[in-house]
Amino acid sequence: MAISNGVSDGALLSKPSNEEPPTLERTQCVYNPLHTYLLPRGEAKHYQQQYADMYFARLAQLKPAVERIASEAFSEFEIAGQAAKKVDRVLDVRQGNLCWVIGTVYMEMPLKPNVLEDIGKEHWIAAPPPREKYAGEGEQVMLEDESGRLRLTGSSLKDWLLVTGAIISVLGTENSDGDFEVLDMRVPDLPRQPQRWERDDGEAAKKGKSVLNQTRSSGGKVAIVSGLNISGEAGDTLSLDLLLEWLLGEATGSADQTEAASVSRLIIAGNSLSHAQPIPSREEVAAAKKTGKRTYGYDASSYNAAPTDRLDTWLASLLPSIPITLLPGPTDPTSTSLPQQPIHAAMFSHSRAYIENIQPSKTDPPNWFDTSTNPCEVDIDGWRFVGAGGQTLDDVYKYVNGEERLDMMEAMLRWRLTAPTAPDTLWCYPFQNGDRFVMKECPHVYFVGNQPRYETATIEGPQGQQVRLVAVPKFKETGEVILMDLETLTPEVVKIELFDSGAG
Image 1 (cartoon, rainbow, N blue to C red):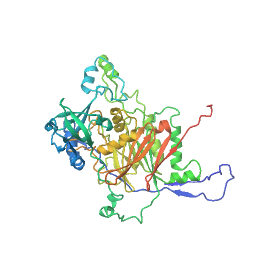
Image 2: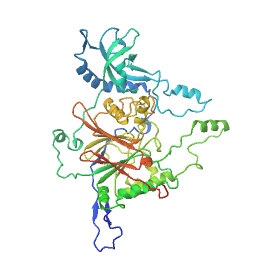
Image 3: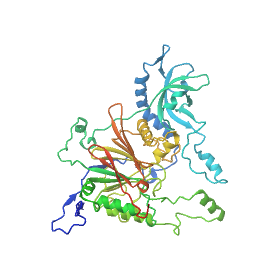
Image 4: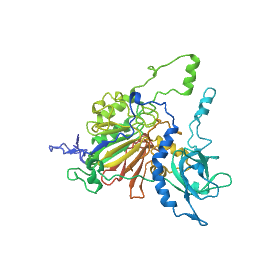
């Protein structure tokens, strides 16, 4: 766990010294994985249930919060002497009556993929390329609950960011066309935010006191990186080697080595490997049907183990010095549907010794090498971190016309949903007893990996909640690592660049 610091700034060409080089001890942090998104194992996990129940469960979970906020906002709203009244069901809305109602948003978009059309076309036409945006002409906004569906209209809809799956309350009246003319809108907004160290100190933390403050270290940082995209090709790992040397304190001068020693944990937020899921394309499936050749599992002749071996070796070089949390992404070898389950320990022949429990539960101790879910929820030094590998935000991006990723992340938090568009356009597990994607507590840090560029902001909630938003860029493209200070929650960027001596 010690980092050797044998070279000082400006001393690379100095003569050897008889002085013993100083040793830097890596800062430690208190880490507690919450396992919010772990699915049941074996026969307890099945896909026989309907996805419609998931929407009803989501509405039942979030309706009380939306109702409370809407009641406060709309209780004194009047137009021409008529006061707004609450309507329990969308089908109870009557023309000319000023009212507000709660339901689930459904976006009708002609450009959005339709699974039934895809099944019908896959036998006679090649699959179209994935669209960057579903938003376009002809889209309609619907509000639905267990009773039925109501179409929403009005110029005020343009002021709100909406996607399928969001739970909202709308104020307005039904017009002569049978549509609901929206005047105002409310969302669940941020849930209660736990006090720092509340999980460890319990009631004392809620009263603003920390039981163990005297023994806890401070000043550490957590490093967040995403999009390593290891392909196993020649020359693919030079930037990774530089990142490894920087994290281990084996490069640069004493100042950078001191900063590296303050990194108490590394979080890899998705896409560690490049296209590692051996899922055949439609063309490959069609060719197999024509030739009559049946392939079970993967084709050993075309399988390339180099990317996995390279990732395993890279992690094994880091793990003796720094603990790691590994989130899967869309290109990593694990389940495709959300929540993606941890990458199996069998993939890490060298690193698996640091995984204390292959299938962790709520009673297990924290792992030095935590192969987590996507999304994931953890406690680090008393702060609540919620993170994702990128699919959830990328899918929301397709529903809206804007480009501001931070606005979308803020909207997801205010909807209290980590994956609002699942199961409409994101594959997910069909939850029955409650939607796991509903946020029960507000995080202090919300990060999403594999984004086009680094962005950050701080948002506030109605009860004083403060959340740091961080869009983590792809390391393969930008060479950027995000360092989050665990005292101030202030992020900074470390950039690792490769210079081409022949350029220019």
